[in-house]
Every structure is written in C-alpha cells, then in structure tokens.
Image 1 (cartoon, rainbow, N blue to C red):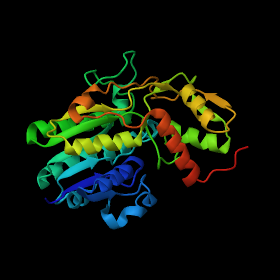
Image 2: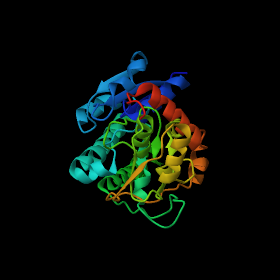
Image 3: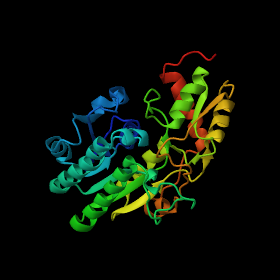
Amino acid sequence: MSRSTVLVTGGAGFIGSNIVDGLLARDLYRVRVLDNFATGRRENLTHCLGDIELIEGDIRDLETVEEAVAGVDMVLHQAALPSVPRSIKAPVTTNDVNVGGTLKLMSAAHKAGVRRVVLASSSSVYGDGEQLPKHEGMTPNPRSPYAVSKLTCEHYTRVFSEIYGMETLAIRYFNVFGPRQDPTSQYSGVIAKFMTAALEGEPFTVHGDGTQARDFTFVENVVRANLLALEADSLDGAVVNVACGVRISLLELIESLISLTSHTGETRFLDERVGDVRFSHAAIERAKTVLGYEPSVCFKDGLSRTLEWYATNCQVRPTR
C-alpha cells in the first residue's frame, strides 16, 4: 500500500517539528514541510532533513502554497504567528499571516484535491469566563487579535467542510510546552521562561498574583492528537480541545520547578498583561470521542522531561 503524503505547515517550529518527528516515527507517511523560518528554527529539522521534503516559503504566498499542497493527501496546519502579546503589538500582521495564510492554504488545498486538513487552533478563543472546564459548546469570547485570528480560521475550516466536502478538524491547543520551545523569545510560553529562570537561578517573573491557572499540555500529547486526526475514520469540521484536563496555577508551577532544581523560589510579581486569560481548564471528552485521545504524558512527567531537555540543549548561566 502506498504511503500518504502529509504536509506540515510550520514544521520547523516548536510544535510542528515535534509533529514531524512523530510522523517519521510512525513510518506510514511521506512528510513535506513548509516553513519560512520566521519563528521556526532550522536546527529543529537538521536531524531529519534526509527523510523529509522541505519547502522554504511563506504561507501568505499563494504560489508557494500551491507548490506545497501539490500531491498532498492531508495537511497538519501549524503555521501561524503565535502569542497574544505579539498580536496586540501587531494585529494587522497577525491577521495577515494567521487568517490570510490559512485561507490561501484552504483554497489551494481544495483546488489540489487534498482530502483532509487539521488546523492548530488555540484555547485563547474561549477568553475569560467563570465556567470551567471549558468545553467546545461554549460561546467563544476572544480577548486578543491572536484569539480572533484563530477563531476565524476555525470558521474557515468548518465552512470548507460544509461547502466543499473537505474533511477538516480544528484542535484547540491548551498551553503547550516541551522540548524545542524557544526560551529566548520574548513571546515564548511561561514554562519556557520559568525553565530558564530555574536553571540560571534568576527570579521567576509573574504577571499578576500567580493564582492564574493553565491546563499545561506536554507537546507529546499534541503530537498524538494530530496523528489520531490523520487516522480517524472521518472528520466533519468539528472542533476539539486537546489538553491534560488538569488545572495548574503559576504558583504551583513554581513549586514544581523548585522541587526539581536548586532554585530558591525568589519571585517578582508584575502587573497583569492586557489580553491574558486568568483561568484555563479543558474538557477533553469530545477529543476522546472523536479521536480516541487520552493524554499519554502527565504534567509532572512532561515538566521533568522538558527541564532535562533545556538543561542539555540550551545555554544557561550557572546557578547563583
């Protein structure tokens, strides 16, 4: 039986490159990557360049996208400009990349006869609200241009399923962390920043009082969800949450890192950031039903594995 060809957009990024590794490990697919290396890193793919087809280009360039989807069976669409703070500083660019790029991809994929497109969406579409856990039937309330862009992309995947019969799924990622998340980026997630602080002996920096909580999701769980989406019998434009289903506060995260390192626990508290969501906790029953998804790596194990990767692969200053 011939192997299906899978395109991973944003395949040099933190999540995308981990998905590429997951695909190659399955040995069921031919893997093609599209990335312009604006936020992705070449070193994330160095180890597997001989096993993939790499197209360097921008998701906003239609000609490049048409080249990328030619002969492709399925797409795992990770390419985006991530980060709520970045989107607040540059809302037009965020929309251009995330929404404009996704629409070009969907249009080119439909024209090329691509069977299935899986979209990386975000828990940020829910916004803030007292109701927890957050489930897919709730009315979205995006609080940032980034969240608006992801919700718009979800609508496009649903519409392309309804109108054109394309098999689509939007996966709402909840606070993904793990190896290859860039700790040097000002837009990196809180765990990446806290990892660096823990290893360097610098104070943890918290925006707010630290009681805000997240459903931190180890990247291997996200990879598993994407692989399950490729192998599902059928997809019809649905949306699913992918997370661990456990709420962890930033203060609890700090305590966990203190227990894993020699950090003193010194913490600086700053003002809350505009657009940040205070509480995030996912209901994952729909992902279990649609995909057969279960988180395979719990928060504590994922944190330990991530810390080990950062200590080995990232340049850090000696602990004070």
